Length: 391
Image (cartoon, rainbow, N blue to C red; front, side):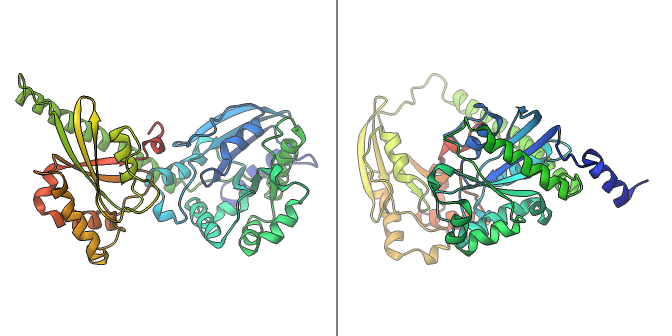
């Protein structure tokens, strides 16, 4: 026997009779950064298994016995930006891979939403785009899990859903009106977790005992991408090590330490240039969080060297023709602020953002305002290194 009939028999096998209680539950947590996923995972398992307060850079799987059931919880990287195109490729791959970490597949995917934050149409579209990385079928197995339930006070979650507006209402309805509230501040209240597990079992019973199963082809594609990336990483590291070794041989016996270093910071807006300048100088010399409208030059002693840093106006990741003429003039002027010229130009890239072909073209056009020779003196400086985690 094979095909849909056999599949239905397999799905319903563990839920025959009136008792829908499952001996094993497999759960995947999905959501934006700072939605409370890791904290929710700890509340579900009844102990501190997931590290809160830092970014989940890769999927983390934890298990434990809860209310007589063997429960597996997989935490995933949270997305930071509204559009899936802006989410890093590695994060998207981890979201897809998450379902393979609890074979043969999760019974429930929890879409974690912080109830203390407003929920707009942009949030709705972001959730829709990110969840559909797992295919349209994912919605049949998804439950909206509201965190920070303490924030509601005497307001019921139903009142919150109604008053928050159409975007949140659409989401709850898309998930078959399945939702639950967790008060992560009151982990001693075991009933909130027991009720949540029962809601999973009710949903599974309604599906004839089926779990969510990812299309095999998509999982294979993700695994192939991961293997390709790992191979390229090895090749890149080998190449860099060879280059550094060749330079050490070339300058063997020579003193190449500089008493003075002159640096120019270049990059897109919000790439973290000003913050990088402060980190280099070891103090708050550049104003972060506001636009750098004109070049700013600061100096200081760092590790026994006199260091000059010039910050520049950032560009939007568009064609150079779309950048203001004044900003282009400032970029060109920057190299004259540290005479006779900078030893290094740092191209600052925010590692938390996806880097597309459009970004590459934009960088190329803006750097070549300083001529083709600029590349020989340029170092890529990645900011937001904390975002990488163990990656």
